[in-house]
Structures are given as C-alpha cells and as structure tokens.
Length: 327
Image (cartoon, rainbow, N blue to C red):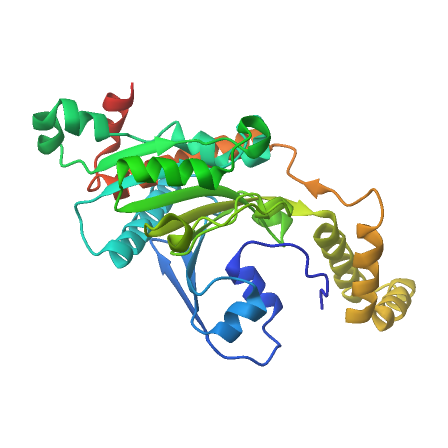
C-alpha cells in the first residue's frame, strides 16, 4: 500500500487515500459520457469535510486520457466538460440566462501556474457587446461574460480575493467561475484530468501557499471552480517511486528480488512513511515538480477549457462562430 499521502487538491484522490477510514457523508458516482470517464464526489457531512479537508459540495473529475491524441476524443471531452459546467451553473443559479465573471487565477509567467490566465485568452467576452451592440448580442443568444486575470500577490501587491470582490461589486455577476492550477497525488494525472466543483478555492493552495478563500461567503456570489492538476510535490513523488518499485519486485521471479521485496515491504508501513515524509520536508529536496513538457500540456488543456466554457456559457455556440468572433 502507498502510505505517502502528499499534497493533493483533487477530491477523488483525497477520498481514495482515506477510503479505509470509518466515516460517513461521502457519495461517489462514476459514469462514462461518450467514452469520457467522469467521477463525482459529493461531500455531504461536516465529518467528511473535516477528514478530507475539503468544503462540503460536489467535486466532478473528468479524465482527459487520449483527448489530445485523437480529434474525436478531444471533441467528446469538450462536450463532457461543457455539459458538467452547464449542470453546475444551473444547480447554483437555476437559470439559463445569466451573467458571469471568469477569473483566471495564477501566474502567467510560471508555466505550471498558467492554466487560469491561458484559458482566459480564449474566452468569448460579451458584456461590452450587450452594452454597445444589443441587436447582435440578442441575435447570437449570448450570456453576459466578463473575464479577468488578477495575477498573483507578488506581481500586484494585492490579494486576488480583493481584486475579484472589487470587480464583482462593480459588475454584479450572477456567478463567478474560477480557474486555477492544482496539485495531484499522481504524476501520470498531471494535465490529464479536470476538476469542477460548486465550492470555492484558496489561490496558491496547490503549492502550499494558500491565500484568502474565494467562495460564496467571501464574495457574496455563487462560485464554481475549475482546476487542473499541474504539479506534484517531492513527498508524493517519492512515495509513488517506492510503491512502484515494491510492485515490480513483488511481481518478479528472481529470488534475490523477492528477498529484497520481503525485507522492504516488512518495513514499509504508515509509521515509516510518516518518518520519511518528515525527513524529506526537513531537507532542501522539498520540491514542487512538474512535467518536462508542461508548456505544451498547459496550452492544450487551456484550449480545451476555453472551448468548453464558451459552449457552456453561450448556449452551445459553434466553434466556427467562436473563432470568427475571437479573431
């Protein structure tokens, strides 16, 4: 068993690592839409919220496996993400005609943190069209959409929450949609899943640098969050390496390998893992790690998210119309 429970913002991963614990108030639903796997985690009780360290609410994880290798899979992934976004919006505000602010959280100059700002580049904003060209706005069946990328505290000297609250006070949207980068337990899932939730987020939580929460309580507007895991910490990575080595040794046929497995597995328990985690955190090896091709992955995922959001926000507008309006 992998006892290294490192940092993760993905609810389904946190639920999996706590599956052996005795508590109530969590519901897991799995299904497939056009070949795209979807998992919903509903955190229903205060006990479950405390154990999982996640706010009560719904967390939807969409698997993007093969989405960037096959055009038809990509289209199905877009449709699935758009459908889940639409569903959460309807649950939160209960209407089809609405105004929204899309907030791309993160540092655009740091590739692994640029999911939010990169996605914003492809969003079809329409508030100005409604105000200046109302006939065009009505004929296209738009919703009123505004998009901002507030940067990070080190760039602006202002908390993202302060900027978002100020803009909301001026624009008065029906819903705020936050887009951010997350941390994962699994290196293979980096830029490979999307998490959608009807709760807020603490900017910077993925790298252990949480700022003020952005949620209904702090903003005063319903909040939806879209996150993509882009980083894994050293503790988690070390645990995965040890676990995979143990599996390889266990499945081997060489007697010396099996002997090594017996010796290592007998010492590999939760107490040992806790000691190793503590020792790693005390060294200069406490890194945040991201894939070597993260620049390419972020561009692909951001493109998928922007298309999905445009479809969900603007009554399933065609990609041709989106391209014509953006270019």
